[in-house]
Image 1 (cartoon, rainbow, N blue to C red):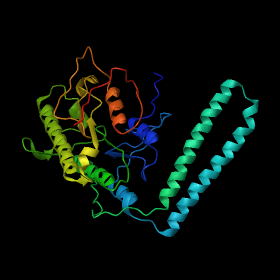
Image 2: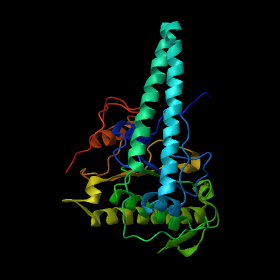
Image 3: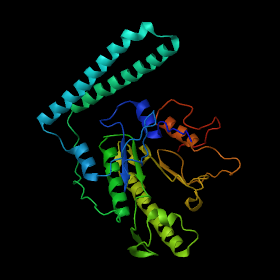
Image 4: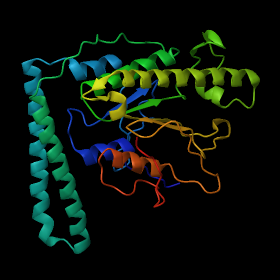
Length: 322
């Protein structure tokens, strides 16, 4: 009761890095319930809706708008800037009448306004630059939610295109089990057929053998899709390095045992990024470390100067580099 979310890892990183790419971040989803589910949250704890349309994402990255549309977008950015100017002028009029506490809050407001102004200026500059080109074809949409893994692979391919074209440096992708109905599996042991329950229903299996068998097949397919992404990133060169060596891939779940809603000892995989891999780092349930310690290591690897994030502590986490 009374819990309020705050800034998510991706938005914190985007905020600290600044707009070094056209898009500060991409927040994506598969079978996502846009109003209630997302991996991206603002500093004030506001949910940022995820993009679940691969075609729309492709257009944003690679389809150049006509001159009239670009001019319209620039006018919108200028209008937002003028509104901020008006608000700032009005706020300054009251500054001398305020007490110390209210002045402090006003200073915080001015800081936020300056940050927005900087983002608007960067956005205006990017609008004047041509979009990158790609040899990839526009994606064919996957309409039915039952083709969960096909949607998953398609959105990962869009994420890879975003990195290859340097459209953004940060991508999140949420797979929404709550909205995934009966879905199609393609597993060497289970076969190619539909499940008997939705993803969320399978995760609450109650030790039912058939549900466990299907959930295991879904987990194997999840790992196959992740493995394909990692192989694809390893096969692409970016300068003298593989794209994988310049990309951190973080995969995980918010549940350690979904059947009983246990969120300790979460299954987390970190690949790429130049770290030393091929190791399983396990911690005692009674002497564990917060996952946010890993987030701090990731942020530092990205060049963000920070010693804390969320519920992290000062024990750190040892992630050797190659």
